[in-house]
Amino acid sequence: MAVNIALKDHGGTGENLILIHGFLGSGNDWRSVLPALTKQFHCYTVDLPGHGQSPAINDETTDKSLLPAIADAVYRELQSHNLLPVTLLGYSLGGRVAINLAARMKTADLSGLILEGAHPGLTTDDEKRHRVINDNRWAARFQNEPLPEVLSDWYQQPVFQSLTQRERQALIAERSLLSNGKALATILSGCSLGKQENLWSVVAKLNCPTYYVVGKHDEKFSRVANKLNVHTAKVPDAGHNAHRDNPDKFTEAIQNFISQKA
Image (tube, rainbow, N blue to C red):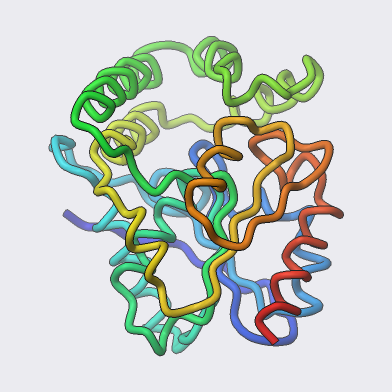
């Protein structure tokens, strides 16, 4: 299975920061925070497979997680461009990729890990089974139904409850420009949280500064942050997508992380 990753250099000053977007996004999702982040980091954005400039994964076998293969592809890309060591910043699905990547990286290659609204993994077989069923249902819809209709329902899920109607419609319009429903279905099913390895202990034992950023109104991932027992920042006036909802306070949280590392 070939996994190829598009990487974009945004310049900047300081250590290398790799930003990994969430499902339905692209490296462009970080545009509101890059001007501030490039003042303290040399920033690179990654496009996940089937998103942005990265080609889709042409693999029909999704009975096991695709996350390890994606993480390995990102690691190879970083190695080929001599970007190591790096700090990883991953949002939602991108955060889960970042955790899988951190688990594979040599200690000297990882300077820090910043997770935004990302889940380290379900802990019971029952939870995993139900999540796989749910994600496969959504994947079938992404593959077979008009994207605007699917997205209209997608952004009604509880994790997006803090969105205003205007914000919800803006996301639907923006994400509707994506055209490859099959590619999205492959990622959604193949990267299901129900197929992901339980990586709570990996995050807890990382030999690098670890930080969790979560929107103050994101109740689900606030609970995850509390259980992880790592340095946490709650971004005011923000839901699940904190860097989009409140970019100024989000970058302020990242700057605090930098000062803690110093």
